[in-house]
Length: 263
Image (cartoon, rainbow, N blue to C red; front, side):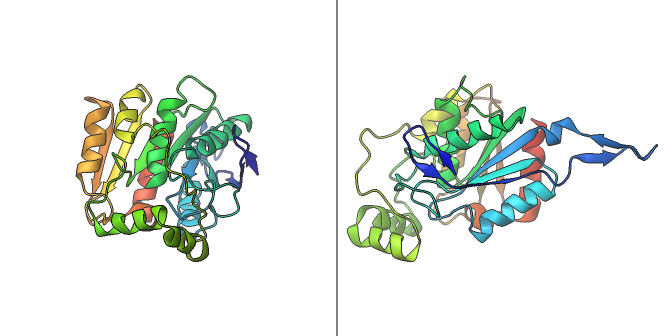
């Protein structure tokens, strides 16, 4: 259990890298690859997810099994075994910061973040807001992240807003989805992802989005990449991919691991 700056208890899981020691092929001597084993990937799930969800565990296994790094997964506030209530991307920045700081305390020279959907918006904002602090990541990847708040342009997002804003929706979220949602509106409205990305450089930034995402169309990742500035972000538009960790296959996760550990 980790504790955030505002006192919320956050459940987390630490998985050491399962690779990172390679054979030279000449003498048979095992050689430690510091680019891999000195890195920890902190994985931030999407709304209604948790550290124990099968899609999150699968992503963590691929990243660790691929030898990308040690992997830290955690449940955002209001999700899984964590305390508090979900603020749907606002104070979740503090949850991610606690996980990044904890990974550094374990001795990892590099700590990188990857977030999915809501978690994608959080890794972008956290990288901008925590620059120059021990919570600052060394590389950031956002998958299926929104560019702006209050988007209702797809049926899927209209359903999400119903869950968040309606008492009966929050009840369904708690009983059916295991997500405890704060009833209070944002005050003030947090920095939008599209305004956060220009503040991330020179930290390496990757934006990943599927061209069949039912929640956020392609103008969201394109807006994020454009806002970062010329050459400040890589943009991967994935053919046939849907939304977030549920749609991220092993091949994409392996590429993410390579990108995160080699920046």
